[in-house]
Length: 572
Image 1: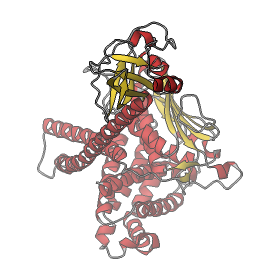
Image 2 (image 1 turned 180 degrees about the horizontal axis):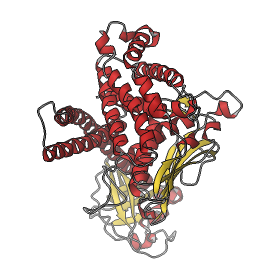
Image 3 (image 1 turned 30 degrees about the horizontal axis):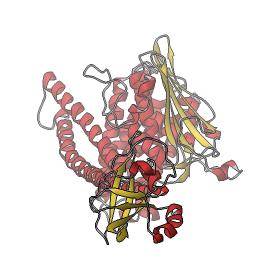
């Protein structure tokens, strides 16, 4: 019922009462539960102070007003009371018994406020509904992720066929091509490659969302991760006449704890984005150091982290888009006229992978002044406390400073002197067949690659001859280019990437594991390092370190691409 807004009083109706009511009045007035007497017409004849407080009206004002709710003796029910004035609602539980009042039968109604209980029940119902809705949403998201994973795999199969046949046509396997035909086939291959990259990104995202993408937690070298990543992106920086600066000191840092393959994937994406967003003659800077968590990073405040920063002098990102760029399919530059290609998945996947490893990926940027993306990774506490720092893989890292690319008179040039690389490449290429034979023999006898024992020689040697030959030929191209942008070098690296992808997929189909494939590339690296050192010219102008580092960059790239292809094949 709706009641008034006057102050509550403890007034008790001065109606005559029988003797037993006189005796009960003090007890009824002191009860915490409201007590009202309702006659047969439904009007209130009596109300105690607790009832007056419940209705928020003086007891005398309640006398003679309709109770508003049918009451039946022996019944327990609930009623809703809308208080006058504020309009707030309270709930009461009613218990009804028959009694005598001034010679007539009336109902004695006990009112116990249950507003808190009703609110608790309503909140429980809401939580149950929210939980059910969340479970439905998670199930739908899981189904979507599973669907994307399946469809990504199904799309990769015909795309690989398109790439393969277009490459065969470019090689003239289907007959001679005119210049116009070759140009069109090249466009088919480029488009298929771009689409395949998008499909692979979607597959990675689907795996992350479906909880199927596992990350390792092993101490790994910072300098090794940077070297491998820069190897993949450096030709793009050279082609755009960008200055690529690597701040010294990464080789002295303690290891990070994480998945080295996924860290390289994140850094490669950050570097590629920097190249895309930076105009020619701009600068990209790579820096790694130990740091406490920065504001805005989702990290444990008292832990130490390895932070890898990639800064550029590009177009920058508006502050209001900092959060949006980490969402799937979102880019800082949107609309049909945007200047950069891509799916907008790289940063999404990168942040989720970083957080899965106990780190984070953050951004600081200003429009028209550039951006700085920082990858945070947990530092190895044992190494920081004075434990041994693991040595990088043989040949994988030498001096990151040697990878710095600078602009000289408007044209890019590498710092290190590479005169003599062509001679080294020619000498080692003359031993290509014995090299492949030795690599195959070591693979067969290696205890870590037991699955190679029962394979035919052609299966073990598959792609190795082509891959090694192209990597050695690239050394000659580096010297001939003399630091200038080289389409031949870009083509050579593209061929290596393609062969490495095919090699990784083939190894997956033959039952190889990631560790087995890494052992294979370790063997390749060791054999080539030994032969390159033996083939150095007598002049001494080309140092062993420069020669082996130049070759190891190509080996690192092939290993990175091959392992990713193997993982995709196994994960599909």
